Length: 471
Image (cartoon, rainbow, N blue to C red; front, side, top):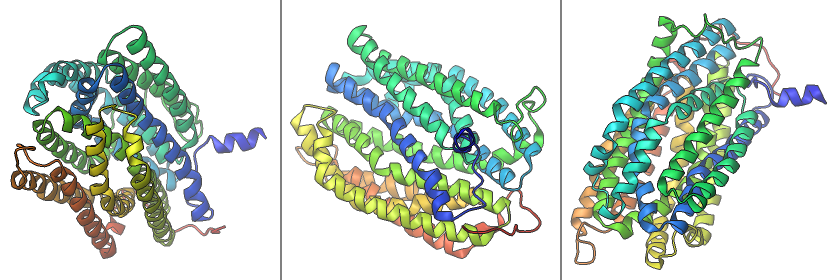
């Protein structure tokens, strides 16, 4: 019994076993974990919308793209170390794996200082540039400053959870997330309903939960003896590891940064349409988060599976697993689109009691629904490419879909749909641009995957493929 429990809570070697079973074992905890993590923001929005009002809900929504833009530093290092860890783990090179993890710890400390000292003081200035509605500006500024100034836990949680994913460990982070989600609900209600702290209470609750998550995951990594060694020697930055992490992570970070920046531009367009549209969009984005959850989990699973098997020099298994992930993602997307069409309007009522905002949000969800099918392919193929170490291709596809397509289409459609009712343009402009860019991104991802160029981008690979059973 004890041996079976330890097996569930340990590193998972995805180079052996039936690919379907291996991917499901890894994906399901990731999916539940992503769901729990999304509940952070969802619970925040529900409590804020109900206890404080629409202006506070709009404040949270307006600050999110800016927050994500600054957290690109964390994503850069996290993406790089996840791929590096999965490939070294697949190659069974535990010494370099430990040095890679240690170097990433030092890098995240620097990134955290940059955000805390260089970004937090200018949070209000950046929000002004995005045309946040005047009714929500002060609250958005307060929330964003606290989140950026207290980002230490967020930074280390991102990096350590990335390490665990690279090792194939998905169950322990899930349990941590479930615990912190419950803690977040309790603290939100305590700080907002009890202490009347407003949006500042939401920010403090998030910071506390992120610190708890980071500490718990760090303890887990330190206890993975025989695989990972965390010591004074390993945490000293190593040039080779730092370069590899940046080579793998910078393109992914640029991708996330460009996406976040495009969200800032689009959020500026949304904010210019008024408080009603900003409030409705915040509610829609919470529902949207649940819609893309499965594909995010499948993308992470594809990345770890691909990285470990490329490290083990088992390309046949990589291709087989890739087909399984793509099919799983598409089937799940079809089910979710159907659910959104049926229950989407009811979900929106959780965030706001304003009927006009609910009706507008329901229309937005219908416009985006086709795009969810496209994003399932885009995320699945993107996970395979990242796991293979081909983060540059993902970066260029992201640039095309978000910079070349999404932002220009949104602003062009808004300009063409200006009216007395919507002087800044119709809200459909934003969501049509998202749907179109997702579909084209899926097509580009499929075309590049078929070229096979990603197969030669590995950081490390065994000289000979292992002989293994598939069952």
